[in-house]
Image (cartoon, rainbow, N blue to C red):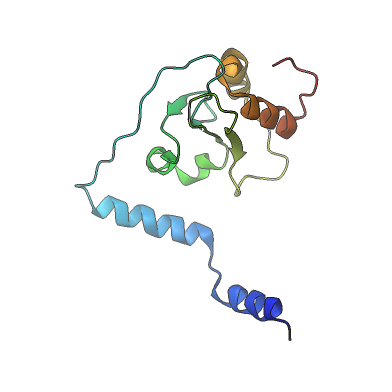
Length: 144
């Protein structure tokens, strides 16, 4: 048996239901009332990127790069599946990312509120975020 096969077999043996892990973590956090992390606040700047979570109701929750977990703690896990996630260093270096929840339903589409927010704020995305957004949602030919 190849090493990769052994590794895959062992990995499958220890895999867990991700939703169970999320719910356990949320219960744990509720028990720790003392911990109140702060998220980075910033002002949008044209072409420098955005970082945060866009909920289905079209509300954008700003956070610093890699602080999304703080925002996610206040969003129902089911709602998180329909969020659009933006990561960026906010310096316009084209390293930004646009991503979807890995738990989203098949055939996921943005809500009208999310589409409106993106239309109004796409000028703030960095180049990489614009390309990713157009690739994910098939909006080719849009100008940057």
